[in-house]
Image (tube, rainbow, N blue to C red; front, side, top):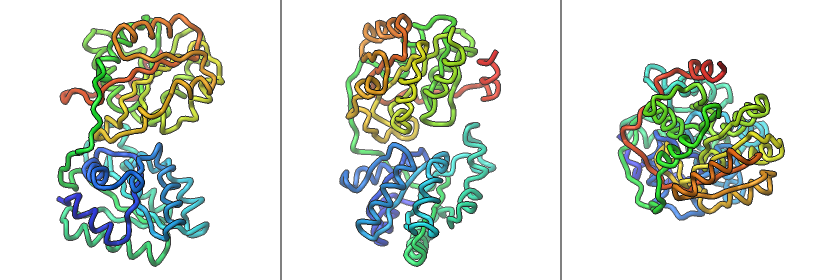
Length: 371
């Protein structure tokens, strides 16, 4: 295994001292070490991976030194535009070291949303003209790979990628933890919200543990899953899926169960949702200030006034809640009043270790909700 401290020290030795990205479960140990080690101005957890590439470009322009951008391979799509139209040698020729968690690696069982991305991870980098290396598990060999990447970037002034398999980094636990004392974690609040729904209401739940918790609650209650669309991929797009559904089915109330990290990733969706004016579009935001599904790295969710932003974007009303009474009252208002409306619920991060995963396939889920 590669110890995060040794990996970071080798990066610093090669002049890589600025870090940005979106957390991934395969990178949680190195990301936690970076968070604990660096001052805030040298480590920015970005809203999305494309934004992280932009930060890296700015750092290079100011210092002449490449930055490191980390991501899950699902985030490669968000980076394609800035990598090709900004960083590429045919444009500005700006080096950046990409650290990519390889979910869905062929031959390694993973969740359905990672299967296709895993198949094309290396070929996509090849198509983009970005050389890459899969990081060896042996620490000495891994550190040599960092030296090779840095040397290549110095010579070619272009992006380079290091791909990370499962369990390559030695365990490291985040020490800089923000503790909150709200009455509920996300699952507890989600159960209250779901219990307040009518049998005809539809739900589009965001990626990660939110969809898993919704599925398990329906199972516990002996309910079907035909009213729920579990957005297992496409982080940040659940509200637009819900909006598209609401516009096409005005006779049904459509609720989006969203997360702070997902909203921040594509926050322009608030402007589209607010201005579309769908009276049946109801937005529930579970804000725990963390990327909870991939290691608990912090977001800026607790520093952002989502309600004011939603109001400025055209939402007809916004509500906030933490207690059971406030959640129940908020859900009643969402169901009663014409939307677009937003209910933001502040919750603690964390959840059950034994949380299961949906037993239906994505295609089964799609066909069920379409029926």
